[in-house]
Image (cartoon, rainbow, N blue to C red; front, side, top):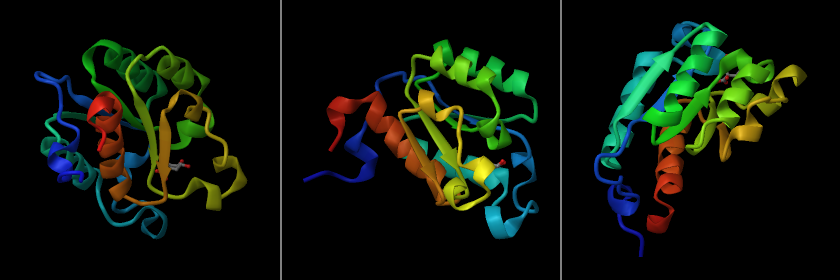
Length: 163
Ligand code: DQA
C-alpha cells in the first residue's frame, strides 16, 4: 500500500528546485476577478507550493512576471537549474509561441496549471499554445492545482518511486 504523500516520491539527494513561473496579471490575485480566481493572493500560492514541495523534499523557486521575454529567460534558466517546471502563463498561454519554443527546449518535466477551468470560459481561452510542451495540465482547482502540480511533478521526476 502506498505510504503518505511525504515519502511516495522522495526527491533525489541535492535535488534542484522546482521552478513555479507565473505570467501576467497573476500579481493581482486576491483582488483580480475573485469570482473567477478566488481570494488567495500570489503569496498564498507561493506558501502552498513551498509547503507541499517541502513534504516531498524539494525547494521551490517561485516567480511572477508581466513580461513575456522575462518568462522566456526564466524558462531557459530552468533548463539547467530546475528539477521540474510548473507554468501558469496567464494570458500568454493563449498567444505565446515564444514561451512554447522555450518550453520545448527545456528537458525537465513541465506541468501547466490554471486556477480557472479555461474550457468553461471564453472560447479564446480554450486553446493553449504551451500544452504541447507539458507532461500534463491541471486547471479549475484554484490554488490546490499548484499543490497537485507539485505532486505530479515529483512523481515525474522520480517515476521509479510512483506509488
Ligand atoms: C489563467 C487563465 C488565463 O486564461 C488567464 O488569462 C489568466 C489566468 C488561470 O490561472 O486560470 O491570466 O491562466
